[in-house]
Length: 627
Image (cartoon, rainbow, N blue to C red; front, top):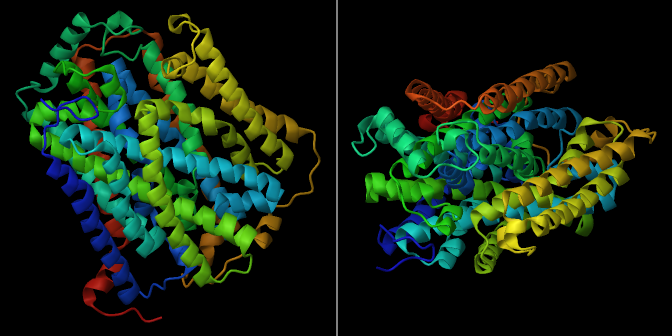
């Protein structure tokens, strides 16, 4: 039997891999490019650099939420969440979902502050430069681009591993080919094209999850429904007890490994939201009145994807005793293998389709994010301050192509180094976590000092790296060696991640408290200018200070309360009680996951249609919009 690079036997023909990667990519490129041209023809949209990078700053709540869900649904969301379910039981999916949704919920606070204090911004780095000057700007530009590279590399690592594992398609070729279709529609339509793609892709992802949920818990004789799954998971724990879990059970939140993963997950994902231009871009594109609602709704709906998918498919892999090597588990092959065992080739095709949607939609968000950074924070800032809109548009498009092709190459290099999706996912907070608090305080705190912010990011990174390596050396089971195994250990990752974000925060706060500052937020507004005036007509009330302050208050209360529920009130009592679920509790847990994904699907599918009903009617009427 021929095995792919991943070590598992392909269940689909290689031609299916090519069809998904090249064929579907081409179909989406054509459909989304056509939709953008329809908007230009019937809705009076004009293609300018402002529109290309901000989508006119008029995106409503439904599409904002769908775009956030899509940008935050990486390969890791679908793969790594089920990996930790396979390793730690039901605590894994919960901690993945909770530990990565609170950042989006809390980011709503920064998003509305951006609307208040820097309504003309194209990137978050423009705000940093307006406050602190070129030196600090360049440091955070490095962190921002590093974040985009890490995220895109993870998307391609996960995507190419699954395409290879299920179809046998060459893993390096897959990594190169996946970005091509995304590049085409992003080059044509800019940020608005990525929003349209996000919406379509998210519908497919939710639909596939609903199919898996129905199969596992309702229709499949292999799993035997909820009670059958319960019996199989209890039996699996008796055969292979989970180290660090109460009674060795899969069905418990009292999991030391799960909790450690949760902490790593929380810290690491603050970096990939707060330091990633993709999320700032969604805040910039949203209507002021839709910003907070979009982020809160997006975070709540996104929670359902890893929570429900991993609770379903990750535990199905355990229940069916799916045989996977540790390397295959770290490559993210739990879901595709479980789906193949459960549903045969149909399951494999569903996973491939879902994964392709996640990789390409999140990938397009990263492409347009890097494009904006290079266009506004490199080209317009340092090379051509008087650039015209046409020049900026050209730079944006060239950047998308260069970055798209370059990231395929980076993914191949990482594969050659032996780095897996799981390793990169856990290490990302070590590399970028130190920039989180300095960036947040730049827009939240009047006293933040530029030198302290810069020092916090750099010193935090150095301390995180030293801590990571130091803990790896100290672990006796690895014989004092520093290698991928010791660096990838939970303790090395945990302490490295925590050190980065804490030291970065402490340095910026300590360095700013004693400094007197004459800074006024109004200074930022005057320094950030538009290249071209937008044609979008927002009501004056959208920018009213009292309205924006009310939205800020709502974001603090809503995001804060949801965060406390997800990381304190819900999981910690279950952790400290050492409670192992009986059939009734497990049934309730499954019921919550099914209900959550059902409601989230309804919101994400129908709310954008309701929001955009006037524009849809305009296009269907065949009449061109008069200005």
